[in-house]
Image (cartoon, rainbow, N blue to C red; front, side):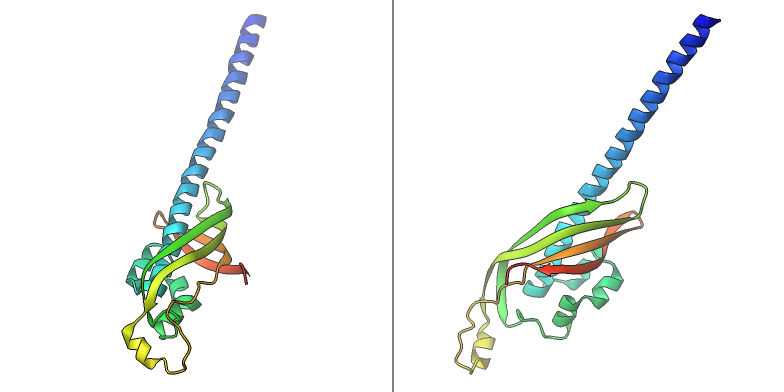
Length: 177
């Protein structure tokens, strides 16, 4: 009887250890999966947002990355819709868009995530449109587009129908100037 009790205790203790290890591995797998998905959504979404602002890309594609409520209230996108974008007089053919993520957290079982990101566009390839040259009567040279203001954001993301969307961007600081 003593041998049977020790054997059962040995098996149950090893089974508990195996279950704990498997649980940790499953949580790590889902965390890594969410992190990869969030990085893709943030990087591609912020790049598409910059392309809509600077290069007049189709704004309907933003629905893949951003929630509809964010698109309606985003100041940068509203400036483009209202014709107040500083890039409207420029023909921009390329940008060097960079995103760096300094912090991200999402529990595997939650549908919400938070990430701290830095966005910068160090190089903008573009020129003033010919139609805008005639409008420039102030004598100042505006041949090249203005620099993009680099910023640090806290992004709040939500999983809707199995897809991650950026729900909110909170400005933390302006980088540089």
